[in-house]
Image 1 (tube, chains in turn cyan, red):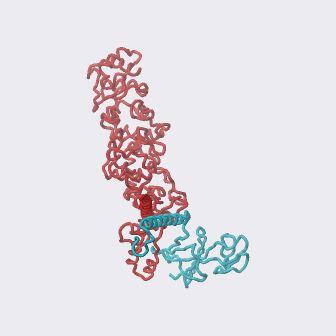
Image 2 (tube, helix red, strand yellow):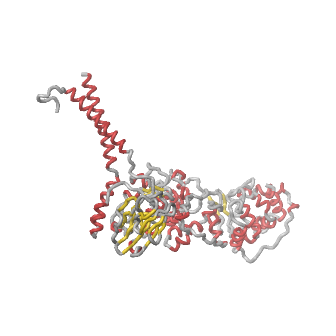
Image 3 (spheres, chains in turn green, purple):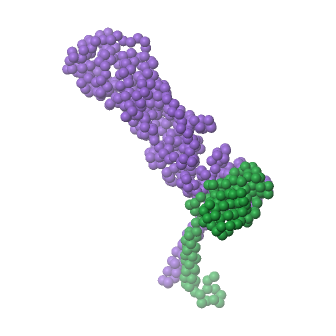
Length: 155
Length: 462
């Protein structure tokens, strides 16, 4: 790689200098890349959005539960389980369940049985949340992951 | 020539820098936990039987995770290495992949409790050394709690009654030892107990630097300190006057109990403590709790090397024959100044009058039926100077020239001043059987009644 062959214009001394600068530049770039990496957190000081709701056998078909603390409704039907967020998409109040669906007490947003808006100021349907099965046999709801309305979790 | 020298210098330093940066980068990209998680994924996939589980294992993503629990103010990252704690498929693997033992996690879900609330250690750490905080060079406040003492964490939320019904045998036996070895005779806890030793409130939460580790063998942690202290008090604290020595098994149990005495209470929603009915203790239990550490069974009067004094045999019939309950009660209440015997009344060591009465009646059980005949003692006829002469010849050898005590008891204190004259007279005249105190009366070493009265006058004037 030194000044062999025809390319004699790069002298031995130049080669030393050039490689030194290149090595230095790579090192500095890595440091900058490492520093930039620090700007993104691996984890945050916040409660996990995933939570366990119990074993599938606790949710026989026909079950309707409201988990106040977790702000979610869990429904179980013959076709499967689904979780609907109870946070109103308008301003974040907690909706309550009515015969025909959900009603927000704050500004009267009304939703049907599967969370679609039927009246009031709500801009969009109540989100359906992802349900999965943990290795230990408990169902897990991930409030940070929305799924398409109508996605059933099959036990 | 010179420019070549500088170019080489630049190249070498650039290469050194590059080497450091690469090393740092590699270390950052391959932390300890990543190795464990990769291995967990492999084991999970191998152990999975159903296609669903295989799929779950295949979907497992290696990455940093944590359990954040706001109510407990804890961030636990233990599950970065202990990945399989909630996975039944990992029941037979070795630590750290293994599933958590027992059914504890069923009632204490990891997402609600985390790990360090029971196991201690540094939850925030992401490598084993700092997380477990073991080893002399880490020196974190709370190293991981050895599993044999794990029951000390249960009392944060459960009371003893509940624990005794749910198999927490170690801490139950530890509490029993605590009550029966007389720990509170010298150590205050929750407002009552003696003053010779340190108060024990919150001792289980005290960080490691509260414990002088100089003489501790092996792991220098709170549990090691406590255990070795119980096995041989003076090995760990050379100036200790503690009498009790326990077997290694007993020491382990007591250590578990002591570690459960913590200051930090978890929030109410976590606690399952019901008000326990306070069971009034009988005289025997109270004697075991407060007196037994020094007086043992009360039968033998012996000089104690560490306390530098003789511990009186308070259940000696010869003593009880002459001392009435009123006198014993007064001694217990007021203590004996100048000796390790502390004042046990409510304002000092915290015993109620009722408790003291129970202890006195328990001690008095040993009193025989025969009571000594009353004698008439008139101190007014006593001659202090004559008494002094006799005292210096006959008594000072054991009781000290100023009555300060030595082999014999300390006589220069309020209790002797307040003591019944008859009691002192009979004690000097008849001596105290089973102790080195001989009878000095006319049938013994030949003091006349008048001489004894002279001596009492002198003693009372100390």
